[in-house]
Image 1 (cartoon, rainbow, N blue to C red):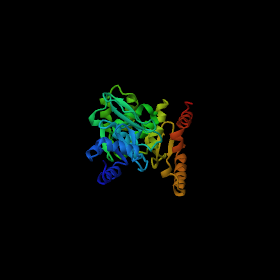
Image 2 (cartoon, rainbow, N blue to C red):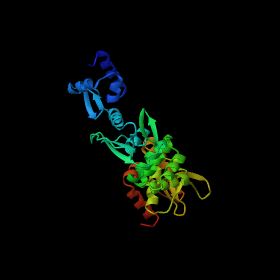
Image 3 (spheres, rainbow, N blue to C red):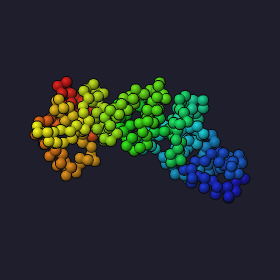
Image 4 (cartoon, helix red, strand yellow):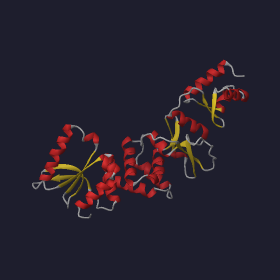
Amino acid sequence: MVDTEQMRQLDTLASRQAGVISRGDLVIAGWSQSGIDRALSNGRLVRIVSGVYRVAGSPSSRRYSQVAALTACAPDGYLARHTAAELHGLLPVAPGPLQLVMPHHRKAPALPPDLAVVTRSRTLSPDEVVAREGLQLTSAARTILDLAPTLDSSALAELVATGLRLRVVDETELSGVVDAHPAARGRGRLLTALELLAEDGRHARAEVEIAALTAILGAGLPRPVVGLRIVDHTGAFVAEVDLGYPKARLALEIDGYRWHSTPAQKLADEERQNRIILAGWSVLRFSAQVVRREPEVLVAAVAEALGLG
């Protein structure tokens, strides 16, 4: 039988666990198998997978899905890839099923396809998993490595820069995970992103500038100088531009919305651009939207300006 106290325990556990409860939780609380079966038959519990239940009336939420998937895969399941990136603050929340990873020797449970997709890994090590907000997930470094094959060079460079800026990962951790997985897909692309960061010190620059530089180099164009200081014929300082080609006297400016959206900022940009032009330089400006969504537009313009189109 299930008494009133056990029902209170059920509600307490459900409130702590986003409405998700396991058979083990119920047994510890004193429930018998017949009591569990009765709660399932009368709708008080709803089976998610074998041994994992949702308490009726619990609200559906992202947290519920995360806890449900991890409980079903316990103790060796971890939120991974895009789902882990969301929790690390690296990517926005995306619709669709969660992504989890389990060790290769463990059999993945048959989760509802709209809840989660589980992959198995032979290479996931204990130092590549962390706890965040009470959830088990892959570390930021391992998450970036796992996402590398699915992203183009520009998006990957921006992801790395975001992680460095938010301080959820550092260059040492990223280099370590790359060294630990020499056969990983996307490893070469991640190495390139790390080399660019190391050479240009770009972890202090805006992610959109990193994306622009990555697109330029990925197209085989000459490497521009990052943070180029422009001076006039007297040697007086004129401006520092995002990217530039001194020999071609070509300046590239990348306008992120945050720093170039107000009337005062736009006026300052115009005055600054005029000073650069009067100093004998050409200027190409690109919005953050173009850099992120249409990098081929940036590449074509730079190539033409350099006489390489």
